[in-house]
Length: 346
Ligand code: NAP
Image (cartoon, rainbow, N blue to C red; front, side, top):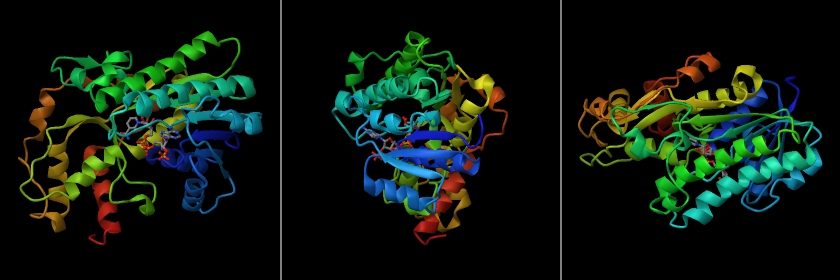
């Protein structure tokens, strides 16, 4: 893959996708990114100083049939890599099928159909941003003796996805990822791309640029933002799970198509496990200006929660990636430092 090749990134305005676009541009790739509207396209272009190597296209709704056809009809003969990052990643809905499952699954199917129709011989690699949620549900992750690896799939059914938004999100990521692998299996002779999926745990770390720091952040960073803006004496949610820094997620998206060892693989992106209590401890320790004005919970008890959880074993992925991942202190520190800087409290 020549570094002058063109990569297409869906959902380019999102938290993770912006870091992916940044990583691609820094590595010398030309990028075409899709956003839902002209307004978002202009914002993305501005973030990159109107870099001539970045072009934007509009895809208003990935759930619509043929959503990506116009992009691949026009640019398919030039696009070598497709990174499908766009997918609903929010939980404030009760219409799970319409808002979460269908855009995730139909978006994945339709981008691959467009590749098959307009760029079957040009696109060499497809990277789909899946999730650890496709690998294991929160229930599985809370089983003390379980070991979770890249081979696993969550047990959520389409029908069972109706119980709550988290379960629906897990289903959306599983069925979308399965659709990608099935598409490749059924179209082996019609397309020539290699498929890699990237399956991150909870993604933390700074927004690509300070102007993305809003009152409410993307779903995963909002967990940290919630503690930064908590009231003293309020409870810390007993939430825990696997985490990874967004800058490492972006790097992994590039290695997913640059490194042959990653082709055909699911990359389970997990540095370690976190609990929100540990996050609160880090914030209280490292940001003296917040001390006594935010929640402390029960300092020092965060690790206990983790002992009751399943263990993730990302050793195969770490071997493929071959670079050191950022730890919890660094990712939490950098997330909070950016929020406080934007709020003038640094
Ligand atoms: P995000 O900031 O909300 O990004 C999601 C992107 O997808 C946005 O650009 C969004 O556009 C776009 N999108 C969603 N639904 C769409 C639709 N129906 N039509 C067109 N575009 C649509 O969240 P993120 O954290 O960066 O997530 C990016 C990807 O990473 C998702 O596939 C997510 O499942 C996956 N992931 C995230 C985490 C995490 O902890 N953050 C962990 C594992 C996997 P708008 O902003 O315009 O709606």
